[in-house]
Length: 253
Length: 219
Image 1: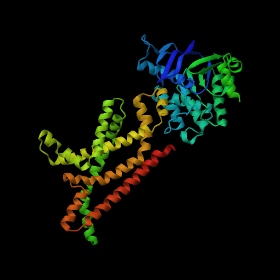
Image 2: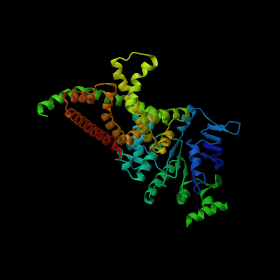
Image 3: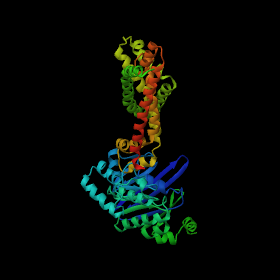
Image 4: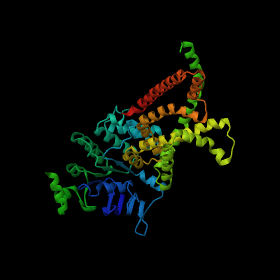
């Protein structure tokens, strides 16, 4: 079953068409890597999928529930606020710049939304948080504030914060782009671990070798189109499209 | 000025100091929440609301506080023909100060809110926080921390501005000091009042510094 589906998504900023009729669906347990040049529409696709940006037209579906659908007049209607609130609980998003709450401790960053938004039992959330903290290698950092941590640690807190919400699918928007190379590896290791646990993930990344080993499917986007998609060894090693090849060539040297 | 005289001036001035404190605290208590409202209106997506608040701020900042106090005090008389009681005198001082300071605080708060990175709002949205939760849990605390230095400036100015209440013949400390000075034909009471303002502000600055340190816990 497809957990997440976006169909015929269109989005423009002024005269600039950023998404041109994009359709993509993600199955349970699947890891999809989205690659492509800057300005190709990768981040906008993720922002439309997570409803940080409104599409101009198209359909957005999570677990069979429509968050947005065509209104029949060439536009789009989004579901009611109550429905959107529920649907927002199906996904998590990890940002390039972490966007942790600076005035909350590590523990509070992770536990506040499950307690105050999802209204879950506090002791249950604390247990989940303790597990996540251990899993992310953040033991002893519970009472630290984000500013006191390295970028890699902050990103691990951000991943824990997203996971604490028990999302069905996790989106990553260039999760390592703001990190030094040595910190990149630790984040990639964490994501690889999640992939092993069959977490459904969509990852916008510039890390080609990582995309190759962790992704079940690679999507190459350019100019607001999905140019090519398929198994990593096909798209990244023997691409069918010349544009993909040119992009990869630029990357390898 | 000998010591006995100094002590007697001090004790007389103390009588007005209570009123100065009253204006000070009442103004803070009302102008800060009102300032949040002003900031909210100033950032409103409804153009009419935004423009209206802009105009009000512009008038409140662009005309003398003393004049605003007079307008508030005599307003009911000119509009409704009401009789102006002495308790209204005090009320008018409080209202005039609170509204004026709300305009300044509103602009400071707005700048503080706008300085919170948009990524904070996006993170809150993806985590499902409601608008009200996002405001009180995420943006408001971060705004507070950012605005402490300019707010300190305003609070210190307020301490000194309380002396403008003399425009409505409300006998706070400075008005009283002037009366004593006139009665004694001696300007010493004014200097004593100055000393009181200085000490008051010294304490205010110290408290604001403590608050700044307390809010700076996260970096």
